[in-house]
Amino acid sequence: GENVEQHPSTLSVQEGDSAVIKCTYSDSASNYFPWYKQELGKRPQLIIDIRSNVGEKKDQRIAVTLNKTAKHFSLHITETQPEDSAVYFCAAHRTGGFKTIFGAGTRLFVKA
Amino acid sequence: DADVTQTPRNRITKTGKRIMLECSQTKGHDRMYWYRQDPGLGLRLIYYSFDVKDINKGEISDGYSVSRQAQAKFSLSLESAIPNQTALYFCATSDSWTPDGMYFGPGTRLTVT
Image (cartoon, rainbow over all chains, first blue to last red):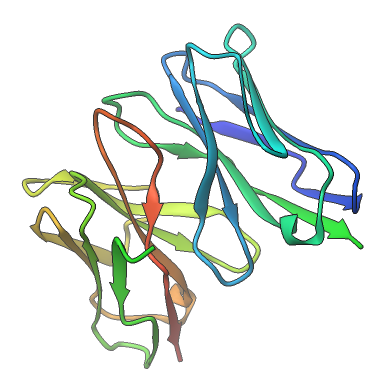
């Protein structure tokens, strides 16, 4: 079945360093890839997304890249801050498809 | 995000009781979902609905049922609650043809004793 693999499951970085989270999807028809941030006790919230006709997208300190050939996409956070500490979920979706497939999540710790 | 609301926000109930969790949205989205999240784990899909007449089981539907009363309302029922249904439950919405992500409600923390 369709699945999304996400790595690493836990990531610890020093404040100011960069963090990278990687995902691989199986459904080659997926064309929309959102990323969600879930702070402790809160709801997941969309922070950035990328569509299949784009290879990279940036929004301030966060960026996403997509390699359709390899079916990989990644989240990059630069100049990490303690408030970036959260669980991050990647997801893959096919327009008109049945549902969004989530990765298992990455718990990011940013040490001050 | 007040566009998706859930009631109750917290609930403690006893084993064997029937409980209903409710979700309402004002985003005008056609799709609605119920997810379960256990501590330290990811999101597991319980049920999803693409419109009022469409209900589909997710990966962990056993012990749960749903009702899509209107496009804006989607409720989740536990017919006979058991302790291992203790979890955080999220409702979510999305749009079929203009995906701009999934919008989650604030969550319902359910404890079954």
